Amino acid sequence: MLITKASEYAILSLIVLSKASAPMDSETLSRELSISKSFLAKILQSLAKKEILNSYKGINGGFALNQNPKDINMLDVFSAVEGKTPAVFDCAPSENDCPSDKANICSIWPFLNKLQGKIDSFFYNLTLADILED
Image 1: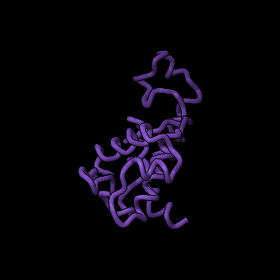
Image 2 (image 1 turned 135 degrees about the horizontal axis):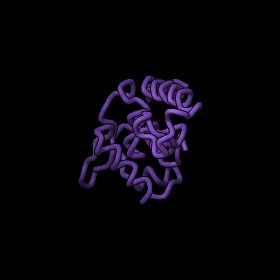
Image 3 (image 1 turned 180 degrees about the horizontal axis):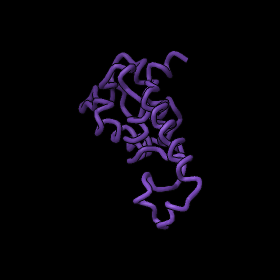
Image 4 (image 1 turned 120 degrees about the vertical axis):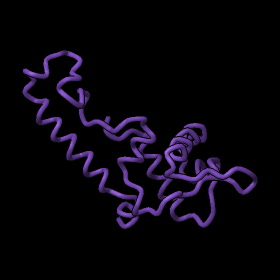
């Protein structure tokens, strides 16, 4: 699947955090977005690990954007949350990595590979600022 619930929740969280005047904890954010706290906490930690978010400990702790929204691209967000680049097809990224060893006779792999490149480029160029404008 190209965009999972985790990726969707990551975007929703980033939108809310971009408008917050102070760090927000995962409990407050999960209530505001009606998302499971434990699931959201994992997503937020993944974003913090990739330095998209800052994580603050303590009584006034929580999460806040670590970058300007124009510097946060969706490819990085999706990769942070999913642990890999989102794929439009379940195939190897190169002919040499084809699990069936039939890449040399596969007629759709070149097309799907080009499509994946265009999607990766689109998500790389799509920033949180772009989403906030819409």
